[in-house]
Length: 130
Image (cartoon, rainbow, N blue to C red):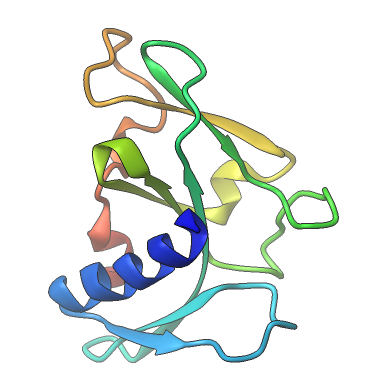
């Protein structure tokens, strides 16, 4: 399952970038992973989504909603992490960017559509320093 794989990979990448992953063992929480920045002593709630679904040559389609079909809110998570499996890439963005959206289109690495509003979130690990 790519969702589980994306979560494990996210933990590893978070650690590689100098942050502490916190495993969430309760399925009743609205986020998948906790992230801790030791320097700032700040905790982040992260919702992880993954996709293999191309919308077009230049875009990937991501289902960015809860299992009940509703949109994520600031009460659910601080950061949305989207894993593009075929590109081995994470997009890391504030949940504020996706409020009221159940599906997102994110640019592929070889997209000819530049700039895209989500380009700035590709491998945006510095989001955990804010």
